[in-house]
Image 1: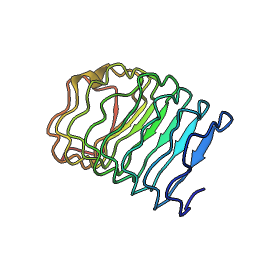
Image 2: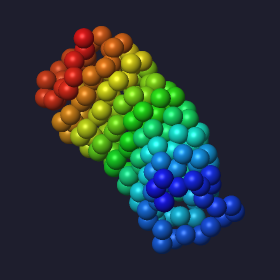
Image 3: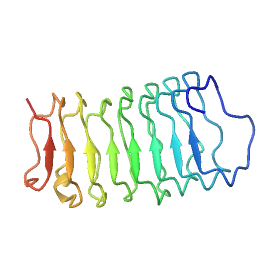
Image 4: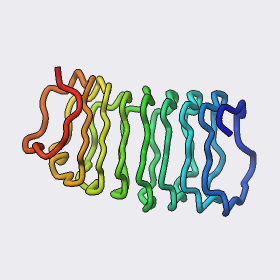
Length: 183
């Protein structure tokens, strides 16, 4: 239902065990999400461009979620990821300009795009041993990278262009491909 005028998906609890994909890209009027606890097989949740969406709860049971795309969800202030998610691989938070922290990510994440967010620092990331792409472009409030970034042996792309408050990199990250510059 990309580009729909929907404000909410449904009321009450809906048991949708066969539903695997939700794409509400650019549903500009969407402001709240339903209870996801009865959608146990959801694999992708695409909410890019849903600028009025401020938060969503009841997503803690999405154990099979692989792709979470929240690009351009400017109203989003927190990022509620569950420790029980065992399948999440791709997280897109690009231009969630009010997002200040990403407090937890499961170790299964391979691609992370928090570019254009208001984060000041990344919390502990050493457990993200599968992380291949970390895009921090235009995180103008980012002040430092954790030293543990050098422990990410799978990381092949790190984009820091536009990180104007970042003044130094951790030591020993010579195996990474750095995109952008620090000037």
